[in-house]
Image (cartoon, rainbow, N blue to C red; front, side, top):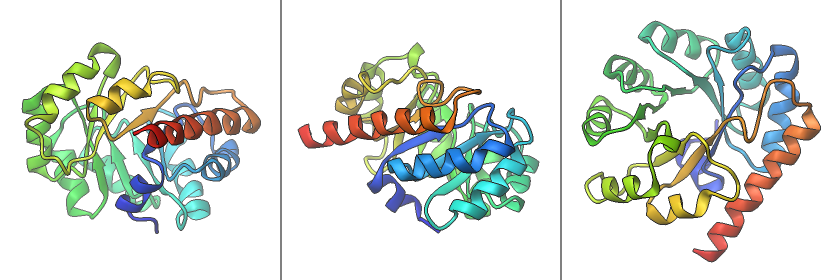
Length: 211
């Protein structure tokens, strides 16, 4: 099992496979890992998400952290872990979901928007924070929040991020990104997913080289 710190060091980009089907998820996962991705989530509002998570975890469990997105209840946390998932991503700050994830030793990345939500999430045991929706904020928001948030807290900007829009967020203090429709949309074939993944991985590498 890849640990969270190692995954972040390798490539701190979360692939969000919203809408993916179980029959296509393994090929997509392989394409993502081949491009360098180590964090993959299947949102629970996808078709048969737990089946997809089980397939991905079985296939990629030693090379990537696989988990679920749009997790809204503690019961869903248990279901994801039973399917082999090791990461819980939510759109909101629900301390019960965060605490259940932490209790089970899972990576917990809750969505937040305000400092109050951020500190509540960390107090409940979050592994990192997901600013969502980032397109409703700005890099200046992260810069201001970074002044008060613990420096060691991984902070992801999620929503509306493209390969050419990473730099100002990173300069403001973001550590990585969750990537949705710019990386994967339902209906893309494996070659298209692979091409998008390589573009994002290259953009990240170029930023790191400049930093």
